Image (cartoon, rainbow, N blue to C red; front, side, top):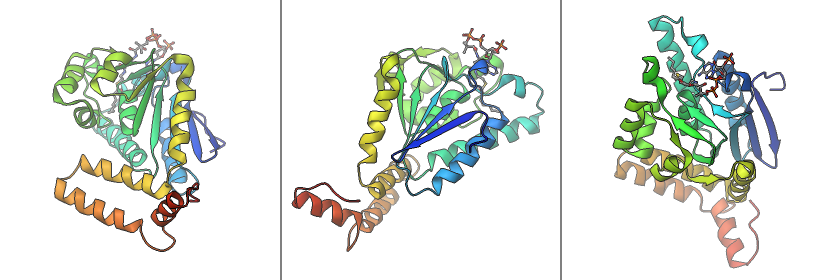
Length: 258
Ligand code: CO8
């Protein structure tokens, strides 16, 4: 990871802070970004010490979309392959066994909003701007934005953004439920880190399981999701389990030792 050109990564106390660092192109997503992100996700998914990942952008953008200069000459097959590739990367990010927080510092447009939506929690600076401007370019979103956006903000809000390409501010994004927290620009990383530290103190297996269960809730029926919940719930009980330790610690009025 030390030879990455776009992503910079710092890991402290189980929190991986990832910065997308291509500000001259407003962090537009190119093939190299996807190669590095795939490698990073593969590596972090195997690291039992990671509790939370935080993604932000360098400069005035979180990410201003897929790299238009790289896409312009693609054939239909190449365009489709690029979309599928990005979808797979974002899906593997979404399936990481710990929560991923997007700290949205500026423009989150097109593929940038799609990346933010593949994260579990979105905190944005008051300067951030959001949109799916693909129809301006005669395109649809290609990294599953048409699928995640209605799930997050409802069909009407999603179609408003998808068909008009209007850019919305952070206040509007908060009202729609697209972001969970809006903070002053200078406080963005501190607030995102504070949340990451809060999550990092909880039972790691429990956090991982609630993440998976909540995602499952968006993809399956109530009975199937509830069955899985009962299974995961049970898996946290028993001798040497995380649940046993958490409950014992409560009864003994001490901090749990996960
Ligand atoms: N791709 C490539 N370069 C970009 C992009 C981008 N998405 N966005 C900005 N840049 C570049 C600009 O070209 C410019 O480069 P240069 O200095 O060499 O001219 C530099 O970044 C700075 O940008 P601006 O000068 O335009 O900065 P402004 O502050 O004036 O404007 C905006 C900021 C409003 C964000 C403006 O840059 C903009 O509209 N960018 C494009 C936004 C957009 O349309 N995004 C959607 C792209 S399509 C997409 O994401 C589809 C995803 C799915 C793809 C599936 C594949 C098949």
